[in-house]
Figure 1 (cartoon, rainbow, N blue to C red):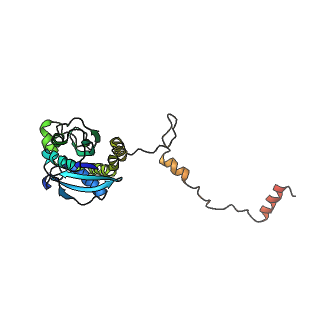
Figure 2: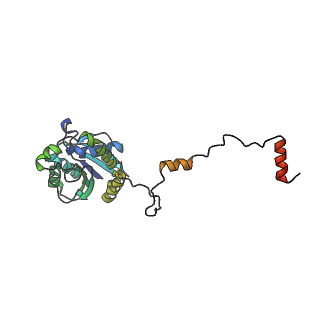
Figure 3: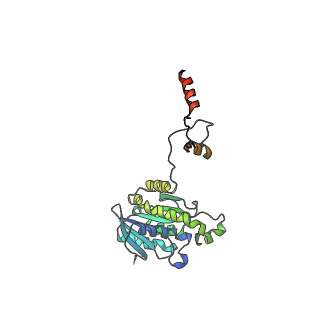
Length: 244
């Protein structure tokens, strides 16, 4: 079994905050893969399902961000899991907006939710870091993190959340590197190659006018050439054939 933990703050006040993107990510996994409806347990909202046959418990702590570890620790002990069985989805201030990186262990980057989880279960859990960008000055950090995504940001962040949900099976296989690669390919698909190279200096393609001329059918003759009749015609035919 794996424990997928989304970090955020409970309540409608925080629903669309950048700090709640962890909640958003696991909500999309639940929706995309038809997990069971949420119920309350372990001081959290939990939902159960499977990815590639692996049982997954999705957990959204309702203890507020700074106490997230209490809920995670309680669930982990109940199911006799290790930190390596825990995957935490959260907002990363020091990643560019809409970028996603995966790692295990390491620093906490000042994230209070991660600090709480480390205090309760240790640091060797897996992290899915979802970039929310930095406002540029530390005095603006709190308002940025606890502010809602801008209207212009929603299309891109929704695409990222959809990609995370659709590639989550790699996380269930405990292959974070493949998850990250598959997600990057989904978000930035490669253009197909034609397999041919044009010589240097050659035009990239014919102009539209040239294309149209080449493709256009030749116009049909507006008239047909008829052989004339009459005495003069007979004389011309006899001269042409050598008859006298």
